[in-house]
Image 1: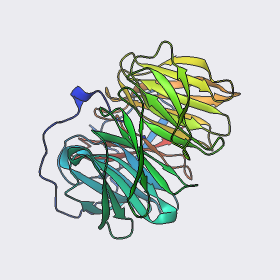
Image 2: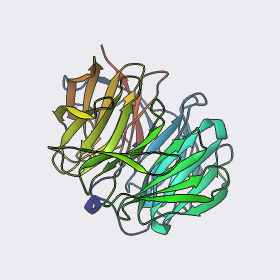
Image 3: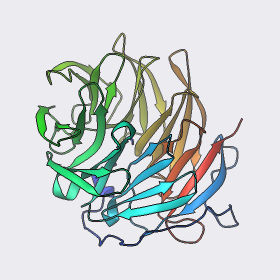
Length: 348
C-alpha cells in the first residue's frame, strides 16, 4: 500500500482487461441509502463523500497521494490503468491506459514523477505527474509489486514478489542500478530515513530484511515469529517502529527498529493487504481483502486498537491524506453501482 501491498496471489486477476480510454470527471456524491458504510460503532470513521471512478469493477491495488497538490493516483490493476483523482476539486483528472496489470504506484512530488509497476510486463513505468505521459520504462524482476523511493540516492526500489528480489532503478534515467536477492517471495519495501536503509518484508521467509541502499548488502534479518506470509509494511520512523501485516494468519506484527525485537502482535481482518500510517495522528490503518479495516493508535511505541469492522466490499486499499487525516478507499462498487473512491473522516 501501500503500500504500499498486494494480496494473496489467488485474489489477483491473471487475465488482462482492455483499459478504459475515457477521461472521467465526476463530482462527489453525498452518502445515500444503500451506500456501503462502515459498521456503526465498530470503526472510528465517518463517511463524508464518494467520487465515482471510470472503468469497470475489476480489482484496484495501491494508491499514492501528492498531498500538496491533492492528486491521488490509483492503480486499477484489473483494467491495466492508473486513475488520477484531484481531491481538491473532487474530480477524476484522467485515466492513464496501457499499463499492463498496473499494480504498485508511487508519486514522488519533488520529481513530478509517478512510478507504476506493470506486473503483466515485468516493468517499471515512469509517468509525468503533470500530463500522465509515459516518460521512460525499465525492466524489473518477476511480478513487480510494491515500490519505495530512496530520496538520498534518487533510486526507486521495486519488490519482485515471486522473483524474490528487489530491483533498484535510477528515478530519473530509469537505468537499473542493481538487484538484491532476498531468498524467498517478497512483500513490500520501505525506506527508513532515520537509519538510511531499506526494509523489506520477506514473506517467503517470514522475516524483515534490512538492506544498505548504498551497497545493496542485506545487513540484518529479523525473524517474525507468529507471522505467516508477512507482506504489508509500514513505518513510523521517528518512533523507530515497523509494522508488518501477515496475510495468511490475519496478524499485525510490530518491530522495534532500535532493538530489532518484535514488540507487539495484533489481530486484524482476514488477508490484510495495504497499510497506511498517518504520522501526524500516530494512527495506523490496515485494510484487508475481506473489506474490513482495523485502526490502531500508536503511543509510547505500542499499538492500541481503536476499532475494526467491515467498511465496504473490496476495500483492501487505503490511502491517508496527512493534511486532513481523511482516508480513501477505492472499491469496485459504490452507491451508483460504479467503481468509487470512498472518503472517510476520523471521528473523535
